[in-house]
Image 1 (cartoon, rainbow, N blue to C red):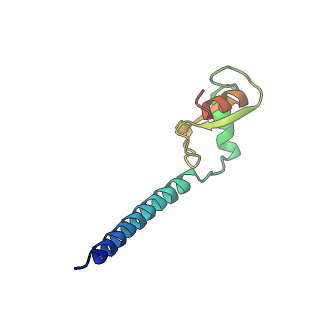
Image 2: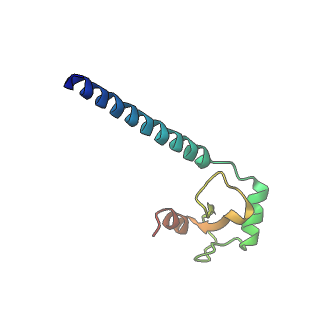
Image 3: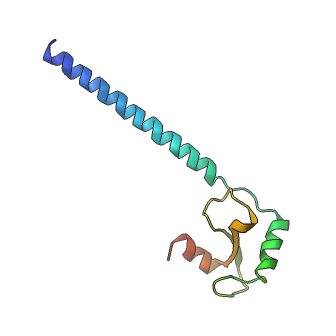
Length: 98
């Protein structure tokens, strides 16, 4: 075989490996995207969560600008044990990992 044939085969294999890696990464990205899709928290569930926290932030005890936070950071997981009450400032700090 000619050296150019070996080179062509090597380049072809490299391209196929690269494409395979891209496809795997795209599939992982799609899976994460589906998990991150936000589901609406019903007013009933929101009320239960707020009532359970005495209508105050569980970190600083503020009762203004209250928001619902997902402990596992997956907005599609609206199970009661995954939702907590935070004020806007504490929620922002949680998202920024401060």
